[in-house]
Amino acid sequence: MQSGFTHTIDGRGEPSDTSFDVINPGTGAPFAACPDASRDQLDRAVAAARRAFGTWRETTPAERRDMLRGFAEALKGRSKEIATLLTREQGKPFARAQDELNRAFANLEGLLAIDLKPELLRDNERGHVELQYHPLGVVGAITPWNVPVLLALPKITQSLYTGNTIVLKPSPYTPLTTLLIGEIAREHFPPGVVNVVAGGNDLGAWMTEHPGIDKISFTGSVATGKRVMASAASTLKRVTLELGGNDAAIVLDDIDVKALAPRLFWAAFGNSGQICMAIKRLYVHEKVYDALCDALVEIARRVKVGEGFEEGVLMGPVQNRMQYERVLELIEDTRRQDARILCGGEALPRAGYFIAPTIVADIAEGTRLVDEEPFGPVLPVIRFSDVDDVVRRANSTRFGLSGSVWSADPARARAIAQRLEVGTAWINHHVGVEYDVPFGGTKESGIGREYGAQGLKNYTETRAVSVPVLPPMAPMAPAAPTAPQR
Image (cartoon, rainbow, N blue to C red; front, side, top):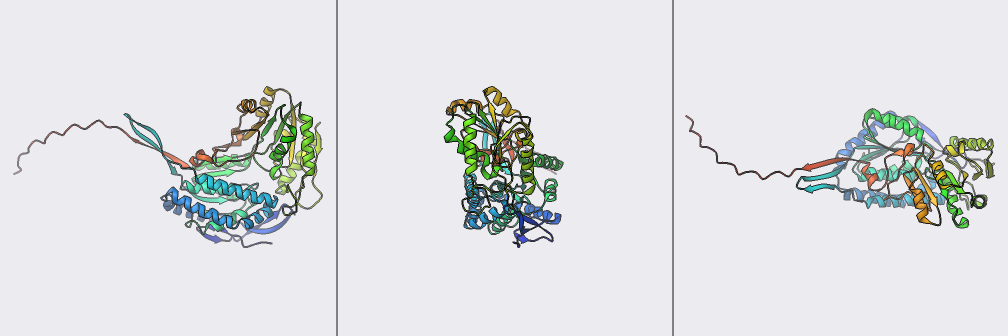
């Protein structure tokens, strides 16, 4: 069992009186102990962030940029160590863990290239009005278990670059890489600027209701996001919520099946389907339906599923037992429908939380697999014949994170994509956050945006500074002489 992990509070490493086990999903067994933060430790982390905010807010963007870049270089120097730990606690193949770090570093650097300057709203005979962006204070950030590094680093970057300090809580399923990131941060920022505390659901609830936190940035499920918002309302915290998606991809009748099948497959099954923006519903025109189903099944049967350090592995386990059992439950529910399970549909006979990549045909809305977000290695492939009908069906959901349209005619695809009720619509690709493009959801998939200038602005408070144009002052008349005082 690995041990020795500590929280980062006020620039120092700090253990806890209690700990909890971290499970390797590739084996189903504990491999490390994680400190479990107390309420007092959270209070001290928030107090440290509040103290540090007073001086951190006065640093210039250039100074913050330099410190964040130094931090990134230190992380890169230990990237193999971080990726190894990420594979052990999250389960993904080691090569994919390295990819996650590289994408996180690229997003960090890209965010620092955005210059958030005051905006001139008016400069005319009515006066001069400027819109300024000022830091909010202390950000409470809560990250999930699917891509913990890829989500933690942008929250740190956006918080600090805009002049805020941060208290960051990772998922209890994958806390260790984030604790290691906090340890590295101690050497690169003043005490209290970056605080990292690990714990269970109670810790998250304490954060969202804490009066010393000014904003919550949360990525996770819709159900938890609603609780976060309700709790944050008691102190009118600002919130950014990036929540679940049940993304639809619409494949038109003119595609090259052989060319697009691998791209569609990995847009659905990357990270074992555990990506908020992965394809969860694949709508395919009836003219290419059977051919595409066959191509997807052929790919699925070639994919090696296994523990993250195995040679040639392309897909890892479902990250935790609760999600593993939920995905298997959805598959069993699907068996009771009239749908056809073309491949997979079962757990692998080995230790760990492994499910064979599962493709389901002849299924439609009204089934749990289509209507709910499975968040695992299972994909429903849904037949359609009419474009207006498929757009209606794609939009008939409480989710609205992202979606895509696939066609040999980009203009045709673009016209359809414009009708999708989502935060991001892609043409001929799916999945991917870009540092300079705001990302977030509509409907129950979230509030606010991360990334891009708009994402950075979500970490600030606006202030309008107005200077009127005054009429010229008339010359003052000379003062009347006063009688001498006796």
